[in-house]
Image (spheres, rainbow over the protein chains, first blue to last red):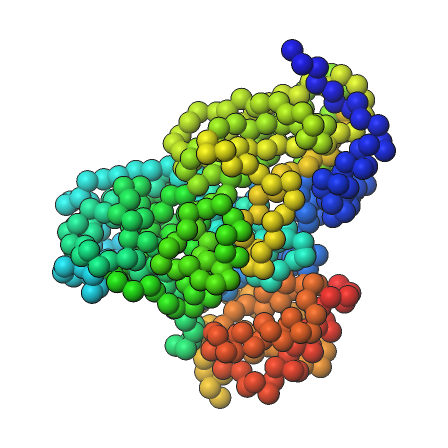
Length: 421
Length: 100
């Protein structure tokens, strides 16, 4: 077996490697983790770049009705982030699941009042269904899938970019249950002219002149068997804060497409052109390896679509002291857009050598996948623990941030400072 | 006042949806300074925590772009003539190089 050096790098090499690989921000963050306890909700404590100092000062733990205390980013519209400890289980509990709304008009919709209307110029007919219709006339479908906000980790961008300054917890993994959208669309009849399905929910802007939150997905994604209208989450009715009574589930795609309180689906032959498609949620064209949304490509940008591969170590934080002889527990979760996780590897020599962690039970290619590795400690000293996920399509996490102005697709490898004492 | 009426209506709507969060929102206090009254118009559409959350990394040009976006893209009923006072206030109190 290959020898696994833990503290075998001299301090000058360590400094050089850190500066080269992690950049000044990360080094400062590591130093901060060493010198004093990090502020609550700090992302530097996770071995990542730190949130803006204004965010750290303003955010607080606050419990919305039916939720445990979550990191409050904004009260109106409500944007609340899941604290890291809730990612120590592979399924994120409903009452700890993050909350994200764009616009402040969020009606409470009773399950018995909810309806979904499907129509549009590229539908053969308009249909209107309620929850009872769906349960009675359509085959149930269930999928375990990660829901992640496009802007998860935006607050870690260097330089910082404006927006909701999310740390690592604008995501969660749940068992979604409902019916397949393709079964509903078959009832309405899909004309060959259909190129997109336009999605709207009952949430609305505070003012009439504000663009309503409306999204679209390619018709082939709408017809994919994994795309659901879900009204249950982890065996319970979909919570109001997470889009109840029913929302769209688009496994592999970022959260912006998972329209909450979904009320209308319109099949169209021309690209949807509202603000939320044409101006928001876009990344520099060709910069990221992801599915392309052909009818929405533009210049110089394109819509964000599918997630990039990523991981999160949840068992240790920067500055942790481990008694020599005891193992360092490196546990966490990894996910991607649906190729599935091939491996998670851990390095303690700045990426020179990597050791495979043991993967947990496979809950499906769209789910979080747990990983676990115990690193033996044989000598005293400081070291940096890095964990890197690789998908079955060969995608891996980045050493350094791949910048975009809206703060999407952050999947930089953590660098967690550990002292063996 | 149109703005006041909208705020009141909005307050009522949000109270239904968010319950106790509304009372919490009222505890957010912006720093005192010239232009604060004009910046308070931001509450027509969103809570004020968006401002300190997005500090302290934007300069006046950046805050101006944000204020213009809120008015021109999101339709905030704030006079364009207030943008300079708002962005000056935000840059001086929540901008790059300011103190906590």
